Length: 279
Ligand SMILES: Cc1cc2nc3c(=O)[nH]c(=O)nc-3n(C[C@H](O)[C@H](O)[C@H](O)COP(=O)(O)O)c2cc1C
Image (cartoon, rainbow, N blue to C red; front, side, top):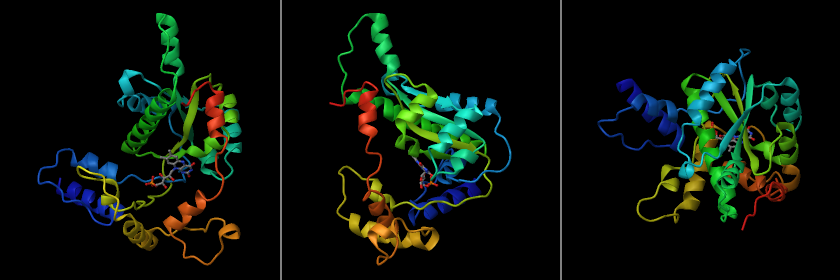
């Protein structure tokens, strides 16, 4: 118990620079410590992941809450080597997608809801952004629950939003019907090393009391940039050919460069082509 409290405090300090004060009584502290110790690790031991275990994790993840009990998330577990290779070929910047012992794609599914309307003979009169948004949120919640469940059994995972760079090809490979769309892939494997905790912006950047407060944001970003560079500096600079070599390289520089270049510009067109009306 004391060890778990110390572990939780240490993980949160590694994450945010400072740990919030822990209440004296903290039920479930071992689970909290494990969740706070979350790490995305992108290299995997040469050990298979039992398909039965992946199905159990899927069942646990799909036990997460779901908007209005609509149950709008699907998991496509990709076992066929041919399909794995076809997906991996779309992801040259994510070589871990080819190497992970197991791989799944988390999808939002608004097709079931529409079928329920057909079955019951009531018109679907809410065909606007909410239909897409609710399914996307459900898929994200299930993805997160799967990551937590996988880490509870000692696996590591890497979500892959890069599959959305080629959504039409992914939809073809996985035979996704209309109103079903990929949110993220997920590499699943036994970690090849311990990895490390990836620091986040300070807790007060995200957690507000009563009123949203962002007046300190610029200072928080500056603090985070330097704290992060102490423990987790970027191994490589992004697009120096475009942005130059003058600036010190930090999280904010990396993120501004990432979204300073066109990315995933066909995504909206894909979503509309799957039958969604976004307004
Ligand atoms: C929705 C989502 C999509 C992601 N897409 C990718 C991806 O395409 N490639 C990748 O290597 N990591 C991806 N990640 C992993 C993040 O880069 C990682 O979570 C982040 O750097 C923080 O590290 P941590 O998870 O170890 O705390 C994704 C994570 C999420 C939640």
